[in-house]
Length: 149
Image (cartoon, rainbow, N blue to C red; front, side):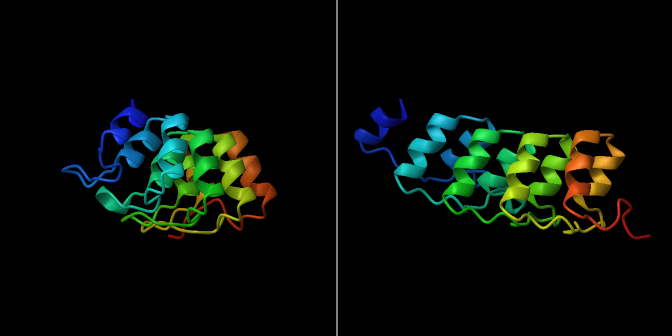
């Protein structure tokens, strides 16, 4: 459908009322094939929607490993921050998405990055009892599981 619409002149990078693009929506919903097509067509993969969320942040938060891999392989900024300071690693760790955490760590995600409340990927993974993620982060020499007081 996307190919058909594009062949008929449809714009591939418009923003809706929430400032989200087709790539943002596709990344958030794990539509690997659509994301790949949009990337092949050269859309802006660093576009920011509400709360400065990029397609990578949305895909990481929702555990879409394939989309995260596609975006990282195209050069998406691994340590991008949304408005509250969270990175893709923090978002994935919070929800226990081990495969996504592993991908982000392999691309040198900052394991010590803190959001505006001082939490790290390890502190949120520990609080939400995502043991597999905790172990991955500990293996990458994270300094402390507790946010500063």
